[in-house]
Length: 200
Image 1 (tube, one colour):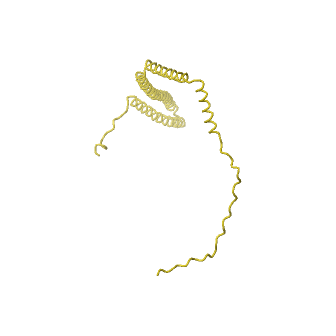
Image 2 (cartoon, helix red, strand yellow; image 1 turned 90 degrees about the vertical axis):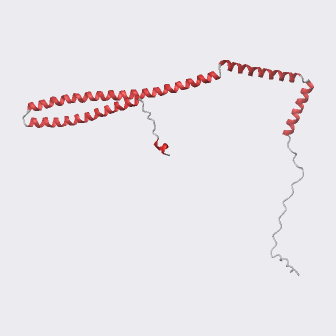
Image 3 (cartoon, helix red, strand yellow; image 1 turned 60 degrees about the vertical axis):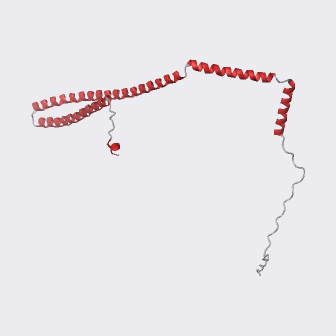
């Protein structure tokens, strides 16, 4: 019992699976980075408005330049995320293709083994033997048919007709009239019970 539950399963994680996992992790980090930049952009826009109200135009301009740079970074992260997702899809599709190719390979090996067991020469030999057997049976049929005289043929046909007529003949219809229904007697009421004789 201890061995049964204590036995560890071997991991079937392939290198492709690890690569896909790493790509997805990088994608998720970029998305988190995008969220952080988006929040900063909103704050910096609000701060630039506040600075303009206070008459600090130079500071507001500097802040808007920084904001513009971060927007460019945001666009670049979008492209990187798209590239990562495309690569993940390519790897996953390639894994499917590899499984298809592996299935085709197994199928081809199976067909080759079957072809080795049943070669073209073997099939030709079996077909030839079958044709020989059919021809031999035909010759036997011809010999048997040739040994019968015309009288025999007539007798066989006559016997066949007789058997066919016997199967088709129906029983004769009775000529006598059918008996009429006999009425059942009415039940007897108050029939006296037989007296019991006492044993002496």
